[in-house]
Image (cartoon, rainbow, N blue to C red; front, side, top):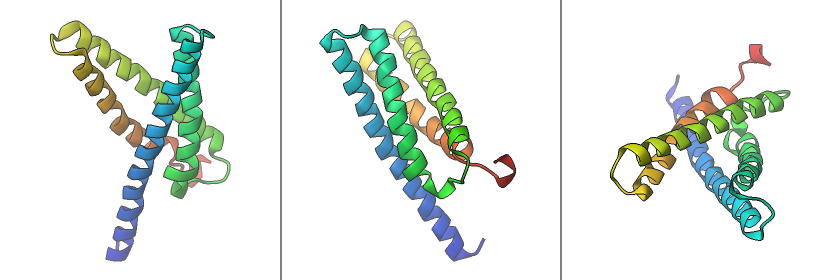
Length: 143
């Protein structure tokens, strides 16, 4: 790969990481606000409110990544496949986060807040890799 092409690729991929982070923060805030609002209003209890928050945040996250973070990978006719794949990644990330946190709380004497931060920190990097390399990446033969 010539030098200019390599620099363009690096610039595009670096921008995708930054965009992924911004969309992730917005989706996390959406999740928290929807879940907390439903819970505090008395409409739903904690678990159903959390699921509603997750689903709402998923729509923010998928839309942001499909149309912005990974727009350079988007191909016609791949939206449903990308959404399905990204849902698998999001659910797996949520499960991994919960599993790591549960292990932390059960097995360590260290503060719960540290465990929460560790469990949260693990998922974004893995989610980015899954999104970049699988959910939003489609070879022409796959479409």
